[in-house]
Every structure is written in C-alpha cells, then in structure tokens.
Length: 257
Ligand SMILES: C[S@@+](CC[C@H](N)C(=O)[O-])C[C@H]1O[C@@H](n2cnc3c(N)ncnc32)[C@H](O)[C@@H]1O
Image (cartoon, rainbow, N blue to C red; front, top):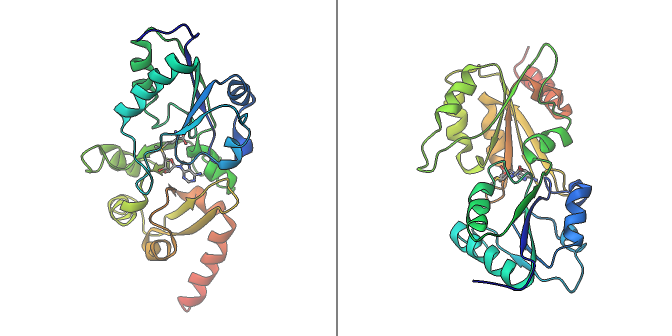
C-alpha cells in the first residue's frame, strides 16, 4: 500500500468516561484528525466535539455491538492512514493500560507510518478517585496494585494472590463477570471484613458505586449490571467512601450489638 497523503497515526487516551476528562493535548489531536477510530466506552459527548466532516468509525470489542478483532483494528488503522492521512485512534483511559497499544503501534510502524501517543487519564485511578476513594492514604495503604484478575485462558493471574498477600490497595479491571470467584480467592488471604467497592460507569452521569465487605459480597452481586464493565477496589481505603460508613452502622445495628 502506498499513499500521497501524509499518513500518520496518533493514539489518544480519551480518559475514563466523562467527556471533559480527556487532556488538552488529546483534544488538540482530535482537531487535526482526518479520521477517528474509537473504542467502546468513549462518551458520545466527546465524539460530538469532532468536526462533522470527519469520519468517525466504531471499532469497539464489546459483545453486544459489532465486535472487531485486534487484527481487524490494526489493518483498519493502516488502511485509513493511507486513505485519509492523520488517523486518531481514540482509546479508553490511557492507551498503555490494558489497551493493547503496543500491538497497534508495532503493526502501524511496520508500514513505515509514524505513530505518536497522547497519554490519557486511566480509569484505574480516576474512577475510584471520582468516588472519593484514595489509592493511598497515610497509615492505611502505601501502595496500589492495578491488575486484571484473569489471564488469557480465563484462569486467575498469580498477581491476584500476590496482591492479596500484600497490604496494597487492589484495583481490578475487567472483573465484573468473575466477581464472586475473585472475592473467594482474595478471601483466602485477606480478612472477611476487608472493604470492597464496585464502580460502574465511573465519572459519568449514570455512575454507580456499591460498597460492602468481602463477607457481604452478595449485596454487590445483587445490585450490579453484570453486562457493564466496572472497577473493583479492595482494601481499607474503601472505608473512606461515605456509603461504607453508613453500611457499617447498619451492620452493627443488625448484628444486635
Ligand atoms: C480494556 S480495559 C482498558 C482500560 C483503559 N485503558 C484505562 O486506562 O482506563 C477496560 C476496563 O477498564 C475499566 N473501566 C474503564 N472505564 C471505566 C469506567 N468509566 N467505569 C468503570 N470501569 C471502567 C473496566 O474494568 C473495563 O473492563
């Protein structure tokens, strides 16, 4: 493939969901795009900032919509770069956090097309932060561990055990469907009163956050939408969330103490 266009690709982190949480540099990149390829979880309000004459193409992988494979996406980026010139590849959060950015970069560069990256605000930190749940707190947690619970074959990652054995705040992405199994695994190493939060649609208008303890996980399981992505936070920092305190009062009252 060759082109007379000035082909280039910019991977832009769109931020965690709220349309105003993209960076200024990301917005500037969108203004110079000739075509935009965007993921699931990108806010429609952010897409509406793109000029009307610029094609915007959905390449998300979520199950209830047309699903693109990573290979399809790589090929499409290159085709559009040759066809239009500047491709902005808009990705959720930060491109390098569970974003498969390296695969896209390697493929595109193998065609001699230059790639640059605009960092994004990752949901891993911003979504708990938006709920007032700190990643670290003096005297409570001095580190945090961002992970996916499962490996490619669906089995638990060893990191889940290592993190559970540490005192780090655990931030688990892509774990909604396996929440019960994750909690069972973590409970082998952390006390049953350990606080846990599940946040869905974080930083957006329809955001929800449910807190509980590991022992009370059914409360979360009964109240979440398992078809929607979410972030699980496990650790004493979750007790900073106002709902956790209210729940704690209820737990004590109902225990008859
Ligand atoms: C494939 S990972 C990509 C993460 C992204 N690169 C980032 O830095 O935020 C997608 C996962 O991020 C989490 N996630 C992203 N945005 C979210 C949001 N607004 N609310 C809750 N979870 C979110 C969910 O766990 C989801 O399954």
